[in-house]
Image (cartoon, rainbow over all chains, first blue to last red):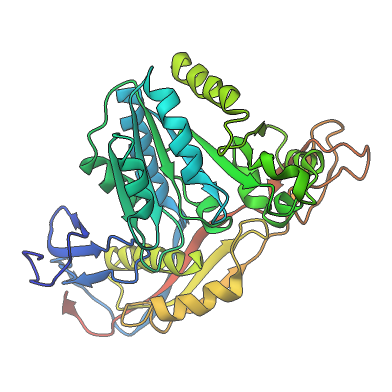
Amino acid sequence: MCETCGCSTDGGAVLRKPGQTGYHVHISESCDGSDSHHHGEGHPHDHSHHHEESSSRKVLLEQDVLLKNNLLAERNRGFFEARNIFALNFLSSPGSGKTTLLEKTIPLILSHFPVAVIEGDQQTTNDADRIHILGVPVIQVNTGSGCHLDAMMINRALKELELQNNSLLCIENVGNLVCPAMFDLGEALKVVVISVTEGDDKPLKYPNMFHEADLCILNKIDLLPYVDFDARKCRENAVRINHHLEWLEVSAKTGEGLDVWQQWIENKLKQR
Amino acid sequence: MHEMSIALSIVEAIETKAREEGAESISGIDLVVGKLAGIQPDSLRFCFSAAAKGTLAESALLHIEEPEGVGKCMECCAKFPVSFYYAECPECRSLRIEIVSGEEFRIQTITIEEGEINNNV
């Protein structure tokens, strides 16, 4: 419960401002803002304003709309840097096999580096339960009606996770190829996962995501003989949008290609 | 539907600024949303009216400027309009294109209304 206004917040974050004792904003766990509410303006001005009549004027802001998220993401990034934590933000549409990929990847990395996971989903702890079985620290963020993770949710989750120095942090975003592309979480790199059961024109249909990503992993390649998916064409489409995009092909189910993926992660971890 | 959380962050930012300026209400907002910014202006308008309810910006008019996408060829330096990231240089056919405009997404100005009485706010 909130001490200031007595409302039930279920552990949601609260923002306060110096010098404005009455001002606080609750941020729900979902952080889509749907539950956010403001209290007491706590207006700091004590001096008089003298006006002859009602007047309007323009005030210049020139402020990035995502400023708040971006500032917080930079704080997360600073935390990761100081602790030498390599954070990856995993993005994909639902059902591409992100969680299975993590289930198969984590045991490979764990023999050399500590690993922790933040799971994002609208509802359920199903994914976190699957990761928990591997014996690594994991926390689930349920975004409720929200369609993406944001920097605030990660900031909160970090306080609940016991992260080790020199470790790998995997952030599995909400399955959605649109919205999560816009929200920096403070990660080192973005990994977009697509599977061969989707269309090979997916990069063209969802260009923002592929434009933002650093690495693309094509998953479920064991199914290639059974589907009309042209891996070469898909890669061409992806690289047209993002010339710097790295590309890996794996089957999390059979283990094919996971050695290259493991090498990719360990190289990044050793470079730090 | 990320437009809703974005509308809420806009309302929060402009309310904070308006209170700093001692405004009674906000009557106008100028946004710059580039055509490559990944934001649907119509959807943002719809969400904004819901997000602004009960705030200083409740009756504010939202003006959205939408700069066109402009690409610059990394090979021949030609500049040309682009509608998305997979643009091709019309001069030399290169695919090495840098986006130089169209990704803007910022709150430019707000118009605030100040009260008519001498008040100690």
